[in-house]
Length: 162
Ligand SMILES: CC(C)(COP(=O)(O)OP(=O)(O)OC[C@H]1O[C@@H](n2cnc3c(N)ncnc32)[C@H](O)[C@@H]1OP(=O)(O)O)[C@@H](O)C(=O)NCCC(=O)NCCS
Image 1 (tube, helix red, strand yellow):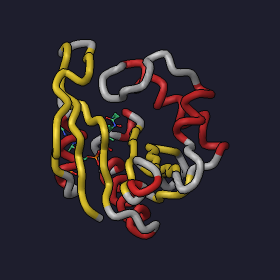
Image 2 (cartoon, protein in one colour):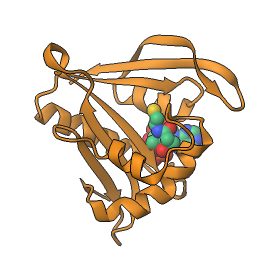
Image 3 (cartoon, helix red, strand yellow):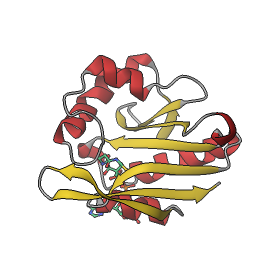
């Protein structure tokens, strides 16, 4: 597996697995009707934002992540990030590799910590992954997310120093 910067040419393959994740409304606090153009703008943030893809030996995109400044000005030393792995390639370490890569790059960019703003508490696979990468839940927004199956569930804020 190789993790590299994403290019505009990667977008069609990325969007093909991202769109159903967004439309499902179970893990992301985006409008479920978000279209390709709007999603592309959000997923490719301006510098110092970064966008990555994980590719296999054939160059197939298996997953993607982005990182951003979580706030500006005197709070701009904290990064945030988002992740999506193609369901066809989950459970094989792609998410973990993207997580490690994002953390390394944020550290190299001079950020002092990483904060995830909205991890849905029923997204147990993601919560377990982020905990194993050193994140802790520093707070939970009660009933912060309207889950289509579980109803109102908590939204974790997760944090780790870099
Ligand atoms: C969360 C997500 C990025 C994880 O990607 P992934 O490639 O499947 O993750 P990995 O294969 O690296 O697995 C990481 C951990 O997830 C858990 N996990 C993986 N496969 C699992 C499975 N089949 N069942 C339960 N837990 C599993 C394990 O804790 C695993 O740790 P391990 O490496 O010690 O086994 C992916 O499921 C995804 O894109 N989900 C939809 C979007 C999303 O939720 N994004 C994150 C929002 S906070």
